[in-house]
Image 1 (cartoon, rainbow, N blue to C red):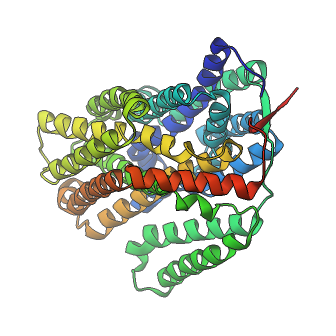
Image 2: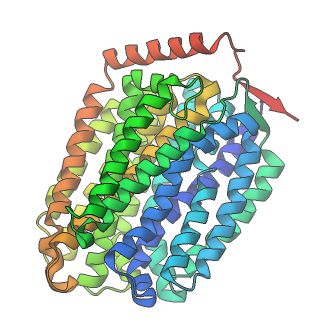
Length: 485
C-alpha cells in the first residue's frame, strides 16, 4: 500500500467506519422492531430469535473466510462487493412478504456484512502503520462501533413509530451507496504479500457447528430438550467441533490458525468478545420485549428509554480506545467486567412496574460496561500479529462477536420461552430472572479474563506467538501488504 498523507489516512478511516456503522446499527436496530415484526408477520418468540440469529450466524460463519479472501484477491475489491450485497440485502428485507422471506433476506444481508468488518479492519491496520496512531484509529473504530450498536434501538424506535418496521432497512441503502462511491475514489487497493489458500472443509465445519448449536438452543424449549431432534443437533455440533479441531492443525493455511491461540491476549480477546456480545445480545432481546410487550411502550418510547445506554456507550467506547493506547487493555477490561456485573445484578430486581429512574441507572451501568470492552478486544486481536495476517486475525475477533450475539439471543430467548407461563405481560419478569444473572456472570468472566490476559506473562506469550508466526511464514518484506494500481 503506498504511503498516504495523514488527511488521506483519516479519510480511509472514515470510509471504513461508515461500513462499520451500518453493520453495527443493523445488529441492534432490528431488536426494537421485533414486536412490530412479530405482530405483522405472526412470529413466535423462536421466530423472532431467528430474525436476529440468522443474520448473526451467517456473519459468524463467513467472517474469517472473507478476511482471508480479502488478503488474497484485494481488500478494496472485497470491501466494495460486501457493500453492494449488504445494500441489496437491506432493500430485499424491506420488501419481505413473510417471516421466512425476512429471515432469508437477513442472511443475504449478512453475506455482504461478512465482507465489511474484518476487511475494513485489515485496511485500517495496513493504513496506520505507526503503533500509537493505529491504536488511536482502532479507538475511533471501537467508538463508532459502540455508537452504532447503541443508537440502533433509538433510531429503530423512531423509524418504526413513523414509517413502520420496514423503514429500519431503508436507512442502510443511501449510506451503502455513498460508501461504495467513496471507496472507489479514495481507498487504495492492497493485498497480503503472502495470501492464504481457501479451507472449504473448515468453512463447512464452522457452518455446521454454529447452525446446529443455535438451532438446538432455539428450538429446544418447543421440541423438548431430550427429544431425538434436539439431541441430534447437539450431537452434530459436537461432532463438527471435534472434526474441526482435528482438521485445522493439519492444514498449511487453516481457516482459523491454531497458533494464534498460543497468544494469551488473542485468546482472551476471543473469549471476551463472545462473552460481552452474548450479554449485549441477550440484554437487548429481553429489554425490547419488556419495554414494549410488558410495559406497553411504543417503539419510540422504548428506544428513548435506551437512550442513556446509547449515550454512555458512545462516551465510553472512544475513552476505552484512548486508555488502551496510553495504558493498555487491563483498566478498561476490569472496569467493564465490574460494570456488567453491577448492571446484571441491578436488573435481577426488575419488576413489571419498575420506575424510570431504576431503568435508566441499570441501562447506564450496563452501557458503561459494554462501551469499555470493544476497543480492548480489537486491539488485542490484531496487536502483536504479523500484518500480513491482519485480515484473518480481525476476522476471528469479528466472528467471536457474532457468535456471542447469536448465543446470547438463543440462550436468553430459549430461557424465556421455557420459563414463561401465561401471557408475556404477566409472566415475563419471573421468566427473565435467570437471564439477568447470566448477564452478571458474563461480567465476571470478562473481569477474570481482563486480569489474566493483560499481564507480563500474557505479553510474553504474544511476543513468542508473533515470532513463531513470522518464522513459520518465512522472511517477508517489512511492509506486509502490496499495492495494486
